[in-house]
Length: 501
Image (cartoon, rainbow, N blue to C red; front, side, top):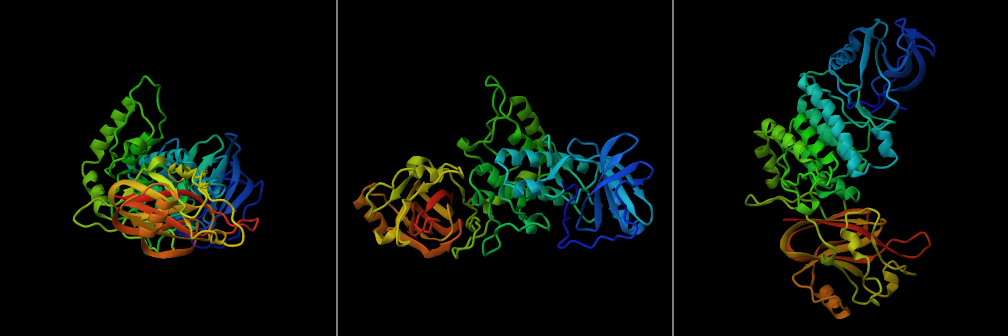
């Protein structure tokens, strides 16, 4: 397993100096036996699995060549971190400078870094919250002593085989501020949900950059994969938005704890406050975070009120922030700029009776299953039938679409769509009425609804359409489908998310 990973500032691995390199079986400081060379990290250190021959316990040994002045940052960070005791912080046992080399001896965590876990598959939202909560707790403990971690990324977040989450490898840098750590916690949450790292927002790391639109706006996690609850999607993107005031680490711990704690017994009152304590707006009641016992909720709110007297007003700048996404085909989304102090568009919840299939030239056999496009689940989709001969529905009809009824006219900023495969041609149309589900009604929709922008061709699986207008009805109109492995043409629409106010 990897015990120390690529650093925040590293772009390419530096060569590791080998003069006087240790060997398996060597005992350092007459106490720490080197058992196995694990890896060389990006800042020129060797990482070993070792054992403490006196206390007879496994340890991790991080060696740097040479020692002396060049190793002071590593040693100072280890000494400072050793003064902070927290269940989610890796334990520091020793820090030794031999001149020729220096090394830090710390707890051995049997497991793997978050990076390796996410490479195997992004985490479910509940587990992602738990990981971020553990990291935030460790950071809050460090900040309480005046120390900044300065090196939080998916390689320094270790997940033990027993499920424990441990933060390792602090950096000693007076230039790094507390906000850097808090933003990096949000980066960890984003990475766990979306599988990529937001470099511009959370700091550089040897990981793929997050998806952005042509304006450089970060794509929210909910666009990158299904199943991310709107409140978690919004919390993550708000914490990464450098225009917004950040909460302190202890306040973030309180909020993540509120989201990560499972419901108590049915007899206990549930905490159902739909207003985010961080000042990031309201959660629709149907999307309220998992319940928390009343006693814990009161404690959380007390902490928030004490620690965030000036935070809420600053964080609510979100309501007037945002940047438009492009309709050119780039993935990513953002709320468009707003005028007159109005709230920025946010994802809205749609029910199954607010969506239907439009198929004016079809035999009406492909209308079922459309509820899957708004069920917030990545494993479900509305699917067309298989068509032969042509991606344009076999030449049998001009297209098919998904009609969404927002319930009332609303300003729509963007529409994010998850397709089952790349290669689709589609567009967004808007209209003021739905004549009903019939061949004639569908034909009227297609004839009267106005296209927004140009049709987008050869789309990726995740795409954002820019609307930026008032409307009640939206039509996702599909005219060409990707080819399946059997040579036929078929498409699934997994999720549609409308950002509106």
